[in-house]
Length: 504
Image (cartoon, rainbow, N blue to C red):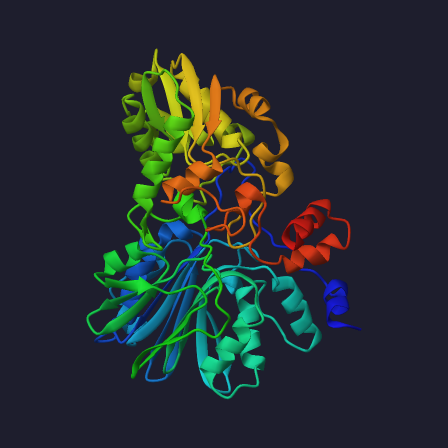
């Protein structure tokens, strides 16, 4: 039986996401932090602070692995970083001058303790802990292949595949094994690995997922976003380049570029939604980009209105930009509660339907008798949007004009964003007028793809060599979708269409 035949025949692990039926936000991916060379066994405490700054990237679970005199200490917990690692005894529990941490929302595998990262394994070269932000598009193919060759998996996470590939490499040195594993994986990833003597960071060949390098005193730091560096008092050194592997040990930092050079295509959704506004991603201020998105939206879809209202919190910078460009006053017409936990119990369908008002409450003093322009960062299925619109209208708004600061989302993602399948994406299944009617608004407008590129500082999208990963808007997937291509050989018409798009 060929390798591909085996992958198709082997049992398939479905990517399960425990998304609330009424949850209409694209779920965040994960965040990673690594520290090497911290003083006085403080590495785990520094990592915990960094993870706290990245809590917006994953609120399901978190973990830290520290190394002290070649011995690893690992803890993995469900819940928020502060609950798990907020105690002053953390350096005692997890001593060491080096540590790696991860905060998680599951994009592959389910919500189980065994899937929490960093994942740790004892190899013949010693222990290794690895944290992964992103998604492998050939995860199922590789996993099924490894299982067929005798590997035993303890989780359903695609990150464990990387550990198995490292373990099975025939290279002598751990760094060479790590690179050997990278050569076999596809997709978007930012990786931080900790061995007993080194910290290794890597970014996928297209730079889809972000990773930055910083210094705090004599210690080195790797993190998903610059806001983590700011929180721990580290200085930003540079972005880890696309396709780059950095190795940090007692000799300093070594940069390795093991793969053929390719043009970078970082993910646009980092700017639209994921990254914190105070982060700088690939040299661009996230806050600045979002404001320019709003300014472009005002130019593309102007309207006579009395007040600009953001859908908090991610819609705020775009709403400020729209207000500045249009001259219409900006007001906080919707107040967001920051105290609703992810696991809030909603015992009945009746209370579930009131959930949107628990998270977002209309401010009647601002809305009553007003023509309102409602600014959101994106519209996915529309289920949350229509509830917000009804709440704003119930608060007395006479007109509601909904504006999305990103283009229509037409295709699902496979690089670390938990986004609904195509048949659940409102823009993929309705015309603009049908969407307007469904959302119950007086007018509706989406920022154009070129408008988004202009907010990024480009003149527009280069159709031949796109500057960013933007498949959710264009269908232009930047890598092969191996797992979906395998499914396309069967009964999945969406997967078959994706396969055709990727191969075109």
